[in-house]
Length: 124
Image 1 (tube, helix red, strand yellow):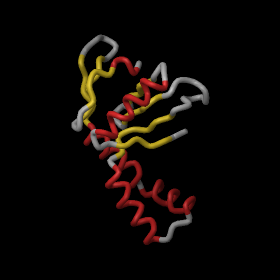
Image 2 (cartoon, rainbow, N blue to C red):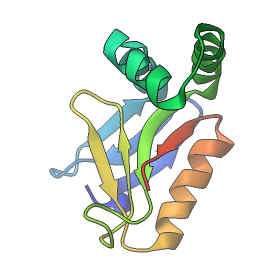
Image 3 (cartoon, rainbow, N blue to C red):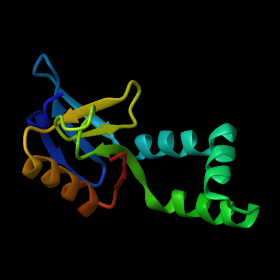
Image 4 (cartoon, rainbow, N blue to C red):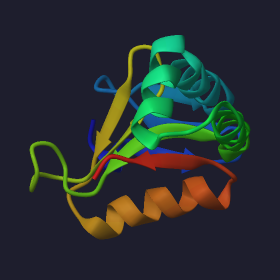
């Protein structure tokens, strides 16, 4: 989706126009729950603990941080493959990706998310 389709960003979520021009809403609380559920999946936790060489106590501290961070989307300023347009992809079902033609558009949306208390995970 084109980032220009985004209409509003509030503390509850994001409103955008879909391909048909219909208004749609992304619920940030639901996105956060999906992101946290993915992180908490046992195989993902085991891998996370291994690559970071965390003890059980350090892993628990990281889990608590992830709960507080309120992640709702992944972001990539370089795009995929590297060098294409920046994007933000929300933890919706299915995932919804907004691509931005300029860095200014990307940063504006990211700033609005953060100003409203939500975070994105950097994939760059």
